[in-house]
Length: 302
Image (cartoon, rainbow, N blue to C red):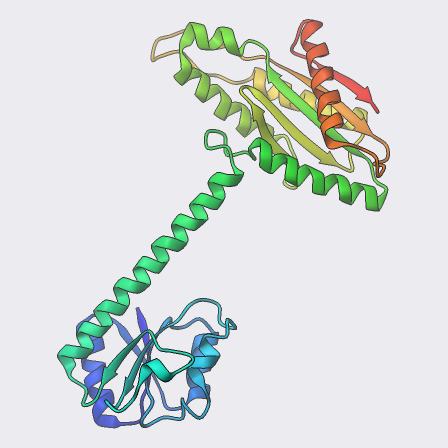
């Protein structure tokens, strides 16, 4: 870890350097608040040891500036000061305080505490990111879950309405999924769902909105695509699904997977166009494809 040190006393800086090196960290030394700010703004350090008695940090209101939210990430501030300093009276407080004279043992302890707090903050950030991801994505297929899909698809519809551009929605369903689960077990079924999701991603454009609707049903919105072009996308997906090769166990027979698709397509998205109705039309088209033998696409113009 790189630790930024704002201190203009050579003897104190030497003690700080020895402690930092003993903990296998790197010291970045600076003599002014402006230099410290440039290091922090560049993201070169997230741990600052700042001495208020021999620097311009109070004059330049460095801690207040750090807490303003202008930096790329949070910064842990260990403030070195005299015992007359009252941290409770400061509007923008440091994270910890080290009183003079500087003791190597005390400084080492303070750095260790700072490391633990920073690590905890990183763990919390990772946990928050994971929770946000879980709120958006289906954990098995890593496609949008139904709620996230609907939110994103609504935005695509609004964009198509403003741009007066076409839009299509594809609903897909695995024809023989129930029989596949009954014959080979849920673990094989889960593998099939993951493979189908991968094929849908491969056969779609990077910016298409893709989701797992429910069970073995998948859904996608294709901005700017209409009619036969949307039908071709669905056909590519179905062809890719037919090519899935997976066996039930090491010596088991190959599992055959087939899929039906329904396409609902709009030349223009009107203010009265309802997303739920569009989804319903695509699902009805998909059911029609299944009723006619499956493993095919049914196209509906709206």
